[in-house]
Image (cartoon, rainbow over all chains, first blue to last red; front, side, top):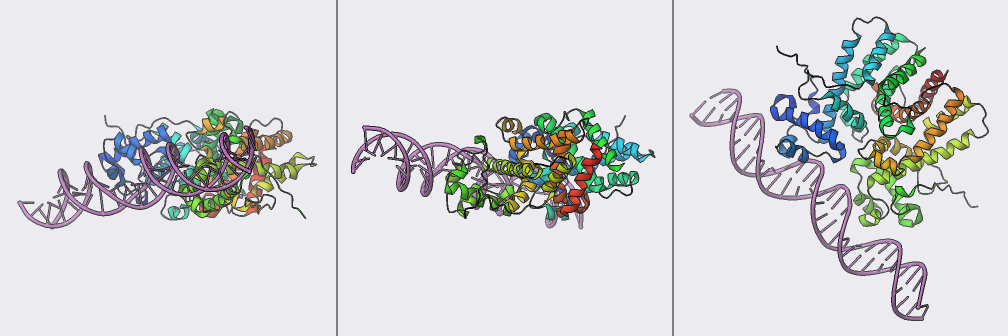
Length: 222
Length: 222
DNA sequence: TTTTAATTAATAGTAATACTATTATATTTG
DNA sequence: CAAATATAATAGTATTACTATTAATTAAAA
């Protein structure tokens, strides 16, 4: 029996040549993600990745302009994939509070590999994005990259969740700010829980993180 | 008349040689901050700074191991300075809600240069920290650096504000998480307001940012 | 006061990084 | 099947992030 494959199409500005269109391309995605998770963005180089996949630097440069673009590709992949999952989790749920509850559960839950995406291991991806995603937008090139659509998937998801917020409380003045705060916080708090515990309160535990953020939203919107 | 000078002493792990102890050291701080604010951490090099201050790379290396340590120095300087200001702003204020209000005002307010710190322009520093501070802890070396005290001032401030949170509501389960979320959010939301407006709601305006975060805290703690 | 020691600065390197240009080899298409 | 096109490998370059060595200055001891 043939398994279903989930294709996540991304904007052309996120690559030089679509990595999903060739075998080397897919190998760059798969092993690039693994290497990133192993050594972090600072030490990650196309040279090291080329050696890992028995290819050359210039081959990788034909898919991505530089490692920053590669990270942005993964960043958009993650949020687009999350968006699909969230859309699925909230269809046919009428109560907006229940929808928000499910969204926050998805966001705070440790994910496991989605077999529908063959060359991306979502468990690794979540860790990489948690550590590196802020670096995609905290740069002197934001405006230029924003223009090019580097943050489209993220903005789309924020909009989607904001719509739920507005349903819960149409008078709340800062729906998008609340959503982006919750999304950023979900990464940072978990990270603090693992590495800087004094900055948080045992947020490495999924259930606590979920409770913290849901409580924050519901009380703020009450 | 002699002006008062505010000395912010920092841990020895944050430098090789104390930059406040010599003229070149102070010049490194002053012009390093300016250069950082101009070109961002990615493009910042000791070579460029050396040219700017008519000195050499190796001289700068005698003060800081690398640019990451230099950033961490500024990061701790900022939070230590903020801690002093907060301590001052809340002395003799009995009502914890009023204290929290003043703290959030200080955190969300655009700062201007503090003349008591001769070689650091706090207005520049705030911008630099808003853009770069996440990069101090989002690294594969966190644990090692945490051990060395790279985040001490930040943790100290979080503790101080958490104490106020606990006074307001002793039963609230996540005081530190709430505080670090608010601190991180204050930077990111303002940044989004300036560069990625769809992720927020006009948070480049100090008063709105203040209202958003204060409202978030008070409702959560109610 | 002079010699010695210690500190500081400048010069000159090196290995690695982030690319680019050129050439070679496939693959596709008219 | 030739021509055009796409892909890959090789070989380079400028810059970065340092380190080691030497030179100059300052401070301390004899």
